[in-house]
Image (cartoon, rainbow, N blue to C red):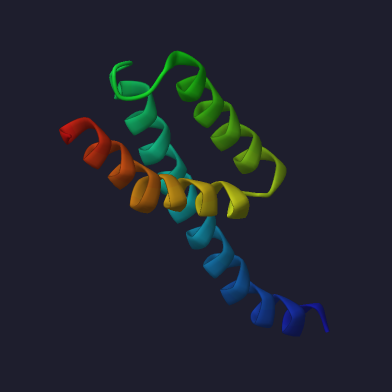
Length: 87
């Protein structure tokens, strides 16, 4: 019986591992972008807030909420920062 459970759960655990690694890469990319962004574009408190939010969201949700937050930052908020700094 345990053999059947392992056969059916192994692909799911592989998919879960790949999803977690992808989420980790996304959160790391967003955190590095925030850390390297100049203070003129983003205040110190805002930078710290984003970094703390990424870390807590990643740790408390097994990566899922951290990845959603990072995706929001990278694909929506960062564009807002770019358009704000170019005007």
